[in-house]
Image (cartoon, rainbow, N blue to C red):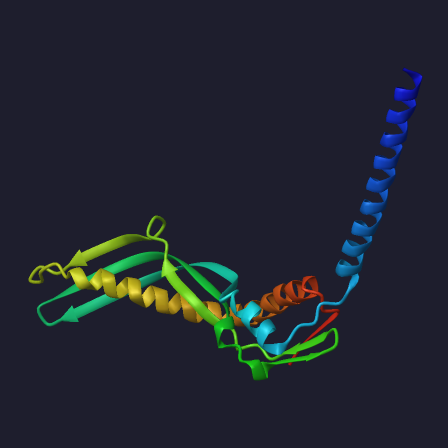
Amino acid sequence: MRQLRDFLIAVTAVVVLALAVYLTFTTAGWMKRSASAHLWSTPTVVREVQTLSDLVTVKYVMEKVVLLDDAKWYGDSRVMLLAHGIVKAGIDLKRLQPGDVTISGKTISIKLPVAQVTDAYLDDTQSQVIDHSTGLLRSFDKNLEQTARQNAVDDIARAARRAGILDDADKRARAELESFLKQAGFEQVVFR
């Protein structure tokens, strides 16, 4: 009985020792792979960055009162709209070309496309017609409110540009891309 117990202890010790040796070499291989530098090529980086597509980085919410008057000799038609608009801006990364990216070791240099307004629209749940009047000899003009809404979108997008939405979008896009590229293994990111 004692011989059987000694035999089982010896077999268990050999199995534990073999497992320890196996795990030591396996873990060392994993460590070596993760510690090695990943070499990126310019087309690979361009392809990976382009997968981000439209990098929308800024959203402005603005309100504006729009008064549209259509005066004719036979009467006036007027609409007053309280427009609640949303303007988004960012960078279209699909426009990035291989010539816009330079890689030197762990440093990457990128020339980004210019920031642009990607979307401008009215929030219909918060926009409302405050006043709509039609002259005595005029019929109701259904296009007048649509025209006022389109004018409001154009005015809000223009106001967002004047308020600096494109500069904000550019700054935030650079910060987002710098973080993304540093996580990919680059130590220095330079924007031209």
